[in-house]
Image (cartoon, rainbow, N blue to C red):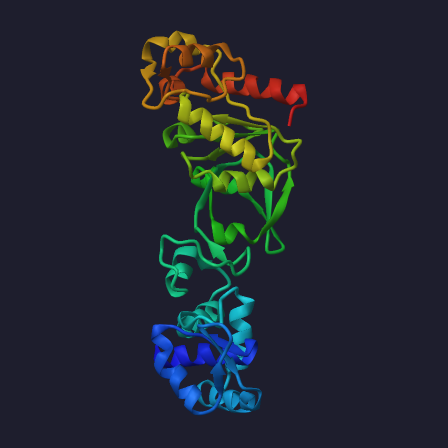
Length: 325
């Protein structure tokens, strides 16, 4: 680490013509002072570079790291700090990682950049840091994905495997959709519901569990805003809030699907763990009733009702006919 400290200080002197006192640099600062490279500045903690020593500072950097100019520029380009010894220490690992991969998991990036797994990394570029999520879709009939210049019939893939599952890194290679776009998109909060909703020929259904709605949002962003979106989740404070978050992230109107026969299942409503508070009910009588009674309804309660497939289709048809995005 001492060599990296010296490189960082020398580079600072080279770029700014001064350095600042600190306990860990006392020995180096004294050596530079003895060599006649720096002199005490006006500020109590500041030491200024003597102009005649510029070439000697560069020569010393050449000895310590012959590629220091290129390496410093690289650190700056990836939003690292060449005045920070830790960034010089991490440089070999950073260069190996970037040269090896187009995409890097953000947790790995934090680890090799010294930020730690729980801290936000300094951004490199918008397309290099990944969470490595999975997008799970039951696509509508006729939907084609354009990926790396090739077209894939994702409906046929889903017909064979039950769904179309694509990891984030592959998704980043998708440039758009062709074929028949969905008449509407339905996001589904719970896995059992997502899997067991009856097939809806013209509707794409997306698994969007809890707070992990980023894949669903990415799918929605790939479609024109003219394609309506509706969320089918738990009818409780958290379920309605999740729908609101998806709406905000996808720039679409907040809309939830509520089965037309839901009141027949009122006896299965449960007490909610979190209060409704300011959760928007948008004047819906069912949500207002649940809110007034401090209750909620899990979507699985109604899923095996024989009417569910037709009811969802009717609801979405009304949305499409209304021309609401």
